[in-house]
Amino acid sequence: MAYKHGVYNTEQATSLTVPIQGSAGLQVIFGTAPIHLAKDPAAAVNTPKLVYSYKEAVEAVGYSDDFENFTLCQSISACFQVFNVAPIILVNVLDPNKAAHVTQNQAESCDVVDGVVLYDKKYVLLNTLAVKNGSATLVAGSDYEAAHEDDGSVAITLLSTAAKEASSLTVSSTSLKPSGVTAADIVGGVDASTGKETGLELIRQIYPTLGMVPGLILAPGWSHTPTVAAALQAKTENINGNFNCSCLLDISADSDGAVVYTSVKGAKEALGASSAHAAALWPMVAVGEKKYYFSAMFAALTAYTDANNADVPYESPSNKDLRITATVLKDGTTVALDQQQANDVLNANGVITAINANGFKSWGNNTAAYPSTTDPKDRWWAVRRFFDWDGNNFIQTYFQKVDKPGNKRLIQSIVDSQNIIGNGYVARDYCAGYRVEFRSDENPVTNLLAGHLTVHTYLAPYIPAEYIENIREYDVDALESAIGGE
Image 1: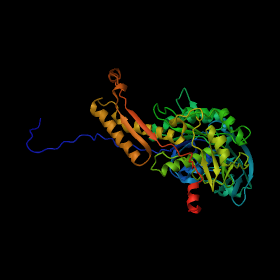
Image 2: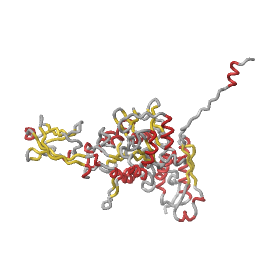
Image 3: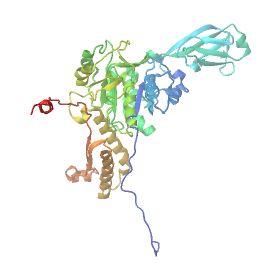
Image 4: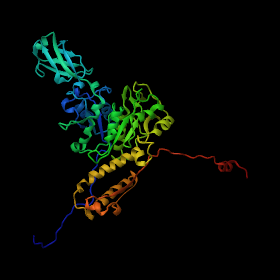
């Protein structure tokens, strides 16, 4: 031991732990993308792609206004072209290695015009092009260059003299076949022999690989099918064994669901939308000529609302500008709901919609669990999300405390740190109350011997002011005072 003579300092770890903040409304979006336009199509299959800009999204999975075939593009457009909110995570399930997801284009003769061959096939994977001049196979990069045109065809620009002088060339290829994707591809699974995960099973990889916790899970263009809706709801709880989030479900705006608002309740029940972690939405929305499944736009609005509130999901996106031009059915027919219809038939049955009140607004605060539950933490969309977000933050913040000695200092550190965080929420009006306690009745000695410590958090996120009433009464005394006689 060193011989000490003088004045010395020692330091110990700070007992108050700095919270780790994530993106409260982080969207994880599942669907199909035009990966034939992506920078690296092979890397864009069943792999979560974290993107922060429209450019990154296009490079990662491609982009097309053909929302029906390429469903991920709805969310790319809603997030980056309508609301300008980021980041998002995109998961494309359209797989060129699946026979059902591609079309083999047989060899055909194509005319050479001014050194260019226009190959009129859609969704062509450029690395599958086989271009021949007679029996000679041309080499990409030295004999020709190929690029997708705006109309979906492929322009093959010839570089070698022999190819330019030919009157025609023979071309074959492989094209993507988005119509071959099924709900089972979105739901996904785990390969028993390789352990490879696909579809919604990839939600497990988000935190381990990206260090981010999902806030919203959605699959616009697919969530209106019962199998996908069931899988989405199942994936919102116990992600990685401990995290929770929310999902968005579209109720079909066609004959398979509801074409009139009075049929929406039955369509919601047929979809199986019943989770407190889900929001059910009807109908579809449009921006000009573009039609979006409501979930794509509502997710962008929710994330945008969070981002404008210091990334804290305490405020409901209801009655916020949707930035759309119409609410529509799948065939494009306009839906014109008034407030009473939206309230009495949709909101009253746990469905969020949109109304035109000097501009289209999202309208509704209830989760899909309503009216089956009236528990505030499960009924209200904003309250449910705050509970999940706060719980996820607690897990991330105090993970570093796991396996440390379970003594009074550790317990006090957690309680004090979380109470300081909670006091900050209350001071900023994020919630009405927040306190954390370590209670002896919840920590019996049998639990302590098993290494199990329990703290109890009491929190009260504000309930949306959904109903504001003004009681009015004729004031007879005022009239008498104004005009009454002596």
